[in-house]
Image (spheres, helix red, strand yellow):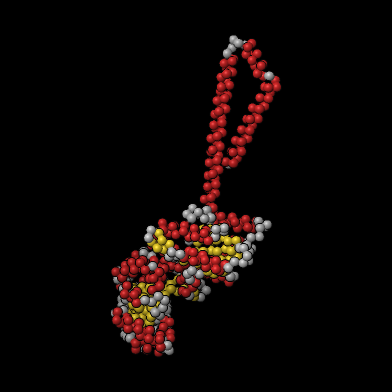
Length: 518
C-alpha cells in the first residue's frame, strides 16, 4: 500500500506540472495576459485588479502549502516503507540473536526447489546445546539469553559466508556451501570445540556442550527441507549416544527416529489411559529370610499383550518431557497399592536422574503421599550417583527435603559409573544397592568378589544397609548370605508381578512371617 501511495504522489505532481506548462504555453501563444489587461481597463469601475491580485497570492500560497503537504506525505510514505522492512525482518529473524529463523530457512528451501538454474551443494549441520537447561535453571534466563547470543556469535565467526539459523530454544542450523570436498566430520568437531569454550558472565562460569548431526544436499535428498530433517535426525542420534558427538546422516537413522516418534505417541496415549502400571519385586532380608518390602517397577503392556521394556520407553519419556507425569502416576498408584500391605513392608521407588534437577520434586512427592495417606517412613526412593552429579546443588536440596520428611534414600547401581566415596559422606543414604553386573559374575571373578566384600564391609562400617540386585542362582544367594549381605533382590527370590498376584501369593493376613525361601 505505501508503494502505491508513493507512485500516486509522483503522478499527481507530474500532472500538476504538465497542466501548469500547458496553461503557460496557451497564455503565451494567445496573449492571454494582454487580453486580461484590456478587460480590466475597460471595467475599471470594478476592483477586478485587486481580486486578481488576491487570487494570484492565494494561488502561490496554495502552491506553497501543497509543496509542504507533498513533502510530509513523502516522509510518511518512507516511514511506512521502513516499517514494512522492519516487520519483514522481524518475521524472518530471531530477535534475541538476530539470526535468521525457521521462516527464513523455509523460504530458502522453497527458493532452492524453484531455482532450477542453480546447482548449489550444501552441508547442513543441526546443532543442539548440551547442558543449556541447567544454565537457565541455575543462573536464570538472563544468563541463558546471554549464552545463546554468544553461541550465535561464535557460529557466525566460524561460518562468516554461510547461513546460520536459530530455530528456537537451543537449536541451531548451519547451511554451508560446499566447495571441493571438505572434511565435514572435522568441521562438526570444530563446531563442538567452539561451542565448548568456557562462558563467563558476571563471574559465573558456564560449561556447555553440543550434539551435531549433518547431512548433504543433494546427496541425502533432492529436497533441501528433507535434507535438513535428515541432519536433525542425525543430531538426535548423536544426542542420544552422549555429549559432544558429531554424527553424519545414515538412512538407517530414519527407522530409529520413526520408531521413537511412534513410541512417543503411544506413550502419551498410554499415560493418558493409565496403561503403564507398577509391578512389584520382593526385597528379602537375607538374614531373617523373609520379605521386608517391594520395589515398584514400571511395566507397559500393550493392547496386543506385548510388553515394551522400560529401557525403551523411560528414555523417551525423559526426552519428551513426560517423565514427571509418568512418575507421579506410578508413585500414586504404588502408594495406593501399598496401603493394603502390612505396616512392616516398605515401598521402594526409582527416581529418574533428570528429576533431581527439579526443586519441586520433594513437594510433589509429599503431596502424593498426603493425598493417598501413605506414611513417608515406609517409602524408599532410589537414586543413582549420575543423577546427583548432573546437578549436585539442586540434588542436595531435594534429597535433604525428602530425608527431613522421613523418606529413606537408597543409592542405586553402586559400583558403576561415577561411584565415589565422597557421595557417601556428603549425603544421608539409608541403603546401598550393589549393581547386578557384579552379582552376575562375582563367583567366578576374584576381583568382582573382592569388590562386593569391600562394599559390604563399607556398609557395615557406615551403618548403611546393603542390597544385592540380580540374584538368580542358589549359589549366589548362599555366597551373599555368607558375606553378610543384608537384603537380596532377583528372579530367584521373586519376579516382578502385578499387585493382584503379589497379594494372592503372599497371603498377607495369614502367614506373612513364613519364610519366603525354603
